[in-house]
Image 1 (cartoon, rainbow, N blue to C red):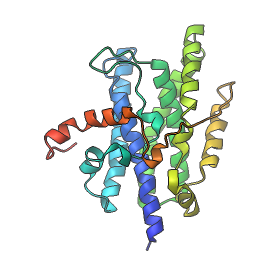
Image 2 (cartoon, rainbow, N blue to C red):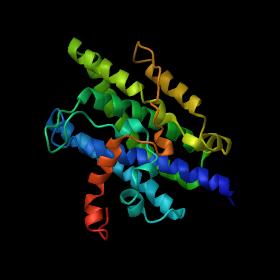
Image 3 (cartoon, rainbow, N blue to C red):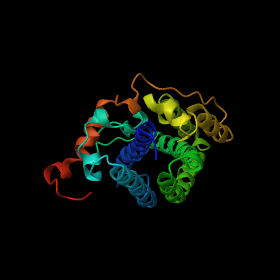
Length: 259
């Protein structure tokens, strides 16, 4: 039987995994009809749907662990109770989906590629160490994730090695993403316990693996940072509040509906 410390650390880790995919899925959905071409529109929509499915698996596990109804966990929590990395809640660019969307495709490609690669490194660590039911979910998710990674890696390689203008935009996007990338690897206040209880390996170990893979593709430093906002501890930008308001609009109007 797991200790109370193990249980609380496990639940915190699952919230982080769930909220990351949940919020990035929403940001991906905002590109519907706005992607560079029709084939990408279909592919990106499918990836965003997969991410929402991954989040749903995590939320279902949280429900099994006694955290409450999965629908309420997704649509009835306040922003300070979300555990996602701040990088993933940042908007795709100026404007909104319904009003003058001027989204940045370079930023979207870099964010999704760097995050998906970090997700792979993180989930590979969980498969080796963690709670059995979580390991089973991770194994299922990893199959779809490999296709996501291939998709974003292809976009990244094409654009970073394309025209001078494309490379400039990509380099600028890389700088923006790296400034918040450390937040993706952070475990927040419970990090030491997660590692000690063998739920996952240390943040630095995963960062080193992530860097090792990326360093084969880029010729610039991969120094990562994090703003003063630590999303794992419930500190977020106003962008998250607006995103959650949109995401929960139907649920709040018809609480009996299933998402």
